[in-house]
Length: 368
Image (tube, rainbow, N blue to C red; front, side, top):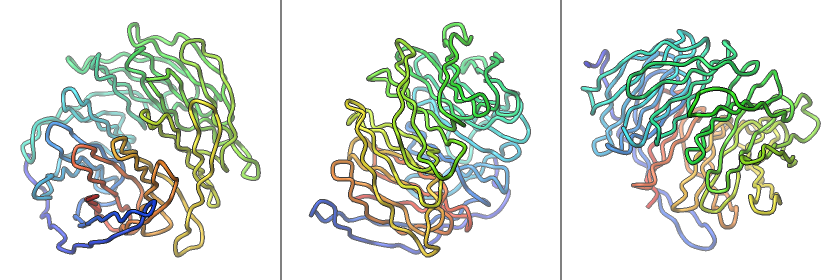
């Protein structure tokens, strides 16, 4: 596939040093020009390329890990989410406004692509690498589309109202879908691609994450009131029993470090913080957020490097990336672009990618 517009590599380089737990940690940065309004991204482990979605130009930019050259792959209208099967290297892009998933594979500018019809409003993607099935939550269709990664055949699975967050436990082959308007989580059996349970959770469940090692599922419930702390619902994957853990204001995003068994929950409100849950005890710690130039924060992206035990969080109301030391919860800052909206981490080379939605760039951070 050929480029449709010229590409430039931004030449500026930032070299920094921060203190974490009393130890100096160096990093370097470059900014790379991509499409308009870049957002969700994912790493292709076979090539170490980054795929970043550009909502404003309805395409994906693919960044070469060595040269940082950018190639362009056409996608559908308003691509919203992307996930990569680490076994096959195929990337799956959910196009929220034309009810399709774009599948890309290959290398660099010559990537091939296929288009798979799905349900209405595809908004999130999860993959079981072991079975090579891909699951797409169709928020306007009240369904999940299951895609056979070998044939691209699809199965439509009815779930609750306004499904959004979706996650897979590859060990048990269960898929968990957060239904915002139903205040529930649908459990899909990956062998039959049918719903086997519907579990009541908190109000307005938005995102979901799985710790396959402990068979626990964590659901961030935004709640209806901005004046009361929200909750995270913990689901036992074996029994479907639930417990509730208090989190910050309107918890919206959740991620799990399976190595440390720590769960990180981002508050969706301007005065929200990061709640850290001990997966073994259920105890919580709150990490204070340094506010940017506007005097408040808007946390909207999280990625974890389990090898270095670093957690990275984007704050769209600043021009920084928050870097959290997992052992101490100490927060340090990495400069980013305007309106940082999403972050991905490649543990293979300890590189961090920040999508800057307002200036059409991706900040590439090498953590040395």
